Length: 379
Image 1 (cartoon, one colour):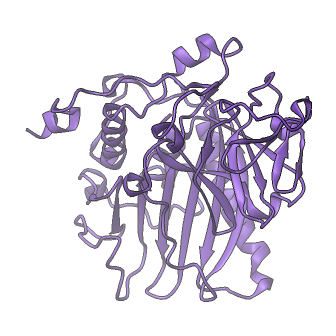
Image 2: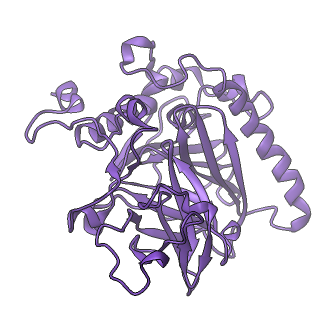
Image 3: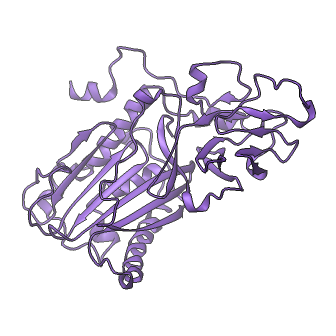
């Protein structure tokens, strides 16, 4: 699991003005709440006084109040009130990590990391968002590791086996034997192709004009955003966006936006939902039984074939982000949880010290100038 990316926290409609909401990401507690102007905030869910869960408290004057002793925290993570101190100065260390937030597409996202704004990976820009497309949104609990879920979405070959009713037209065997036509983008990669073609296509995500049948594409942005285009014709499409929240090492919360530009009338909603969720649950049934649960640490523990080229590129990117020092050391984290309160380091830690909560342990990145695994492979 990786810091320094955007993660979905809660649906905007499920975050009221007067109550905080707890979210678990990376096995760590976070609390979301709205300030006095209605803006969503996300901070670490641990009061630095005696460890109270802020999410079990309440919201007052735009601050979240700890139910243990009434300490209040603003959206910037700083303590604004300590009732037992009266008018005395609040200690400078009375602060918790607070994260940049964006409320878009009906979802509250938090940037869980310490990068300055100019260096942050982007949140996917859904260009279709608007009146010309209809969106049905679902939040689904998956008893599987999020990387396995993303890889499933990058795998076109599984469709004919896992989704027999929707797996047609079958992907041509010559395409299955060839690497997918991948195109990198900042912090991700993807492919777009016609499954009926006898030769690998070169049409990619920014070029989807003209008539075609059975064309589709899948992309990932960062470790946890999966996008799938299903273009039945030049005008009839389903575009699906899954923002994945890794709850822990074996549970994932999927924020699934299913968009379409046809069958727009409300009378079609139930039929589209039934079809969509049937396909999703077919995937989930496979993912919950994978062994090992988590992605192997080395590709030698699985046999990958040319049709897995998108999965391989995803894993190469994961290695690159680990080399940057962004991967959480889950073993070190679990060894101390219960004895130590951890938080994902926020941008404010680059500007000030004297924090109470320990930063989450990270796997050390490669030294500057060291070649990455991908660079070595391509040399």
